[in-house]
Length: 219
Image 1 (cartoon, rainbow, N blue to C red):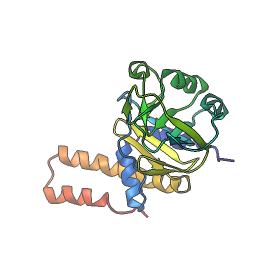
Image 2: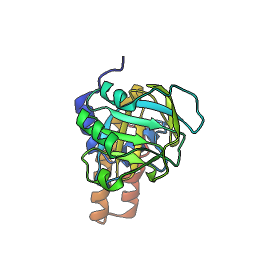
Image 3: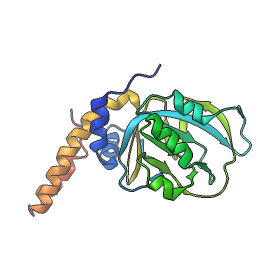
């Protein structure tokens, strides 16, 4: 049974740039960034608990009777549907699946392959992430749900926190969520100090001192 995510923590993460979350992970020696996953709509902000589906490309093995719409309806409101396909060039979701996820109350869809129906997805209110858009038909077989997956270079376990914006997707391990949030709060303050220092044209050595603090783990 996955622990219910804390609403206040999710609300805070939605305010953060993905870069701040990535820097917080780096402070702690963690690596949760993905490569090449972008939102269909650039004004997207997203945070929520990952629920995973693993597909095998082309001739993978698994249960051909799996229905992803049924799986979506089994999820909790605010969850994020994470689809791993080993970075296929085929699409796996379009506007119909996105509408199902949206009306069920999910916080977003993230897939390491392609999507289609880009114009419709861009007009929708649910964050949708993919490697790009394509018309190549899907060629996948279902493997498992709610299992650890590899997603565009990042490990995602069910219950991990997904944070996304226009720059991409960051994955926060559920066991370290409180630590990452603690570091992110400090980094957010230092980012404001750095912006003010640049604007106020302070001496360069003082500016570099502020920047140097961003690499130090806050006790």
